[in-house]
Image 1 (cartoon, rainbow over the protein chains, first blue to last red):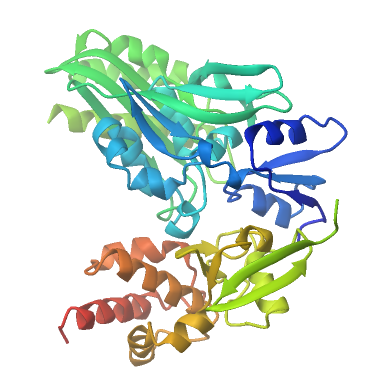
Image 2 (image 1 turned 120 degrees about the vertical axis):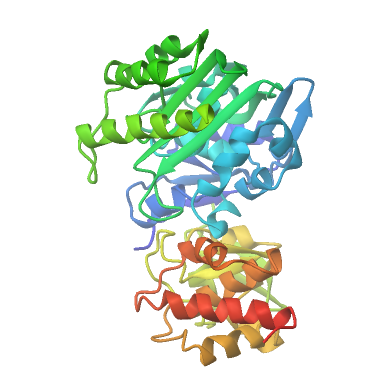
Amino acid sequence: MKPSNFDYVKPKTLEETLTLLGDGGRDSVVLAGGQSLMPTLNMRLSAPDLLVDINGLDELSGVKLEGNQIRIGALTRHVEVENSSVIAENCPLIALAMPHIAHPAIRNRGTFGGSIALADPAAELPACICALGAKIEIVGPGGDRKIVAKDFFKDLYETDLKDGEIVTAVEIPVTSSKTKIAFDELSRRHGDYAMAGLAVNAIMEGKKIENISICFFAISATPVLAEGAAGILNNGILDDDSLGKAIQQLESDLDPLPDLYASRALKMHYAKELLKRNLESWMS
Amino acid sequence: MSKFVQVTTTVNGENVSRSVEPRTNLVDFVRYDLELTGSHVGCEHGVCGACTIRLNGEIVRGCLVLAAQADGGVVETIEGLSESGKISDLQDSFLTRNAGQCGSCTPGMLLTADSLLEENKAPTRTEIREYISGNYCRCTGFEAIVDAIEMTSKKRRGGS
């Protein structure tokens, strides 16, 4: 199908962008990479009357190492993150996740900030940044603010973004020498939407887990941090016994949302299996 | 606000300037406004890869980019790549291995394969499959397509 008609404007500055988005009289939407927006327009699932194309805002693009933080500009393309040596060296979890995001032609256009702002439940990056304890930078009519990733994702495609606000960057703490990570997803075909996915970020001293974040995606409406399971594993030795208990704890931590392809029970099975496979590989 | 936007771009080396509706996507722009019908339209939501076009040197989904976004950019379609001779060996391999079949996915496959071989001179069959996983062949002739891409890569490296 073809989209409904809309107006198109490509602002040159962030200030101009905020003015355009702040015009309450218009149903406007931000066009970044467009790899999720364009399908919804083509299928007429959405019909805004103004597209504000932010691709001219160069200041929103790029990966920078700033002290012990990595700052990824919202407009940074997936392909750039995938090929970034700063990411590979300082944030291997993101590097591991990138090839799972759709296909090369889509990674050439899709943006880091777009994936965060859209908050697709099956998306890889929202789960990664929750596991990493990242902060999201937001600019809007009320000024700048930062929010911890896990508080940003509210519900299915719903975030903490208020009217007229846009995501400008994500700040991720750099990994330490004791960091241990895992990323895995189950999908029918490479690049397809995940049926269940897992991002884990831990600090380990030998076999002892000092601190672990376990985040699932494509299980519920938002990325879910399995805090009970993490609590069981924290400050303990990772072995069959502790892992078994943590896997069992997922029954309480997760409340899977069934979809077209998987029932609640099957989603739970996937989640348990992902945690089992990935943390068992740490023991060997 | 104007009902039309002006798009000035280079398409297969030629400068073009057209006034289009903002909602016109890049693949419809090249097909209908420029009459370059080699780029195909399949699903129109980014899944099938039939509409693959190069924009500023990178392959993109022609159905997920607006023509307006190509303003000031460089567009290359299968017509341009064919005429330049850049992918003639790849096209020969597709013929040799009978990787064309109905031909609907072929332009997109060729552009995607070309992009892969630029990035990776010696891809494994698994890497080829991963790279073209966003391009659907509904004749399901993937084996022959992978053969053709592998054959081109080997020939370019001086093998047979």
